[in-house]
Amino acid sequence: MKKVYKTLFFDWNKTLSHSLFWEQWHNDNHPNRDKSEILTRELFMNNGDVIKKWMLGDVVSEDIAELLSEKVGLSKKEIIDDLSYSCQNMSYAFDGLLKIIQDLRKSGIKCVIATDN
Image (tube, rainbow, N blue to C red):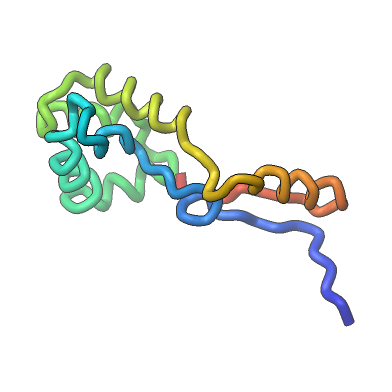
């Protein structure tokens, strides 16, 4: 018997997109290139508990920016602006992915993006 799906859940991170927060900082020509390693270490290694709270919505981006500001040596505004830029410029994992999801929806399958943020 063929299984018919009514709803498909897609994870954003590493499934629909490989883009990262502050991804532009990894570019050799970006003025904050030298700060990307500090940001990654401080946020994702030294403050894992805060990341979990952020992903669950218990901590907001402004709180993250405040936490990072002194450690990274940038203003909260610069950190927030660059976070916003990276979020607005995230891309799909491959060309045509959006069309596949649109086709699934047209066929009557409910498609949901699930993420831990």
